[in-house]
Image (cartoon, rainbow, N blue to C red; front, side):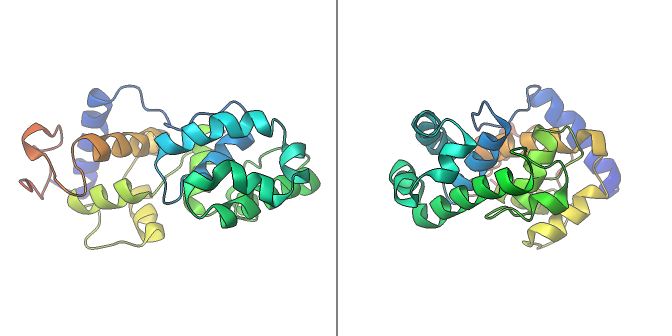
Amino acid sequence: MTKKDRAKAAVDLLRQAYPDATCALQYTHDYELLFATRLSAQCTDARVNIVTKDLFIRFPTLESFAEAPVEDIEDGIKTCGLFRTKARDLKACAQMLLTDFGGKVPDNMADLLRLPGVGRKTANLILGDIFGQPAIVTDTHCIRLSNRLGFVKNVKDPVKVETALRALIPPAESSDFCHRLVLHGREVCTARSAQCEKCCLASICPSYPLG
C-alpha cells in the first residue's frame, strides 16, 4: 500500500468513525476562535472553553480587548498557563485587527501570520474552520499519528508534517481530516497508550500493533 493509498483509506475510515468533525473550541465571533486557539497553547481545549466562557462576557468586543489594561486580560486567563504572554498577544492582536484589518479576521495565511501570537497551526485552523479553505493543522496529535501511520518518518517539525500531508490528503478533506486526527489521538491512539485493539486504522497502520 502506497502512502497515497493509505492516506485515502485513513480519510475514509476516520470519516466513518468520527462523522462530526468540528473544532472543540467554543466561540461565537471569528476573532474569538483566533483568541481561543492562542489560549490553547500548552492548555487543554476543555480548560480554554471554561476560561473563554467568562472572558468573552467580560470583554465582549474587539475594542474591549484592545482598550483593556493587559493586567485585566491576564486576570481572566491565569489558569491557561503562560498567561502573561498570551494576554499581551490577545491585546496586541485585537489592536492590529482593528487598525490594519478593519476589525475582520484576515482570510489568508500571510496576513494571519502578521498577527501577534499567530503561527501556522492557528492560521490553518482559522482558514479551515472560518473560511472553509484547505488547511492542515499540525498539532501534537496530527504529528504523532502522521508518524505512526507512516506519512512521515521520525518527523516532529510541524511545517514538514504539514507539507507531507498536503501532498497526500485531498484539499477538500484536509481540515476535517485534521479534526478527526485530534479526536482519534485523544480517544484511541494516545501518546501514552495506543489502543490498537480498538483502532479503526489498525488494518492500514504500519505501526500496528503498538499496544
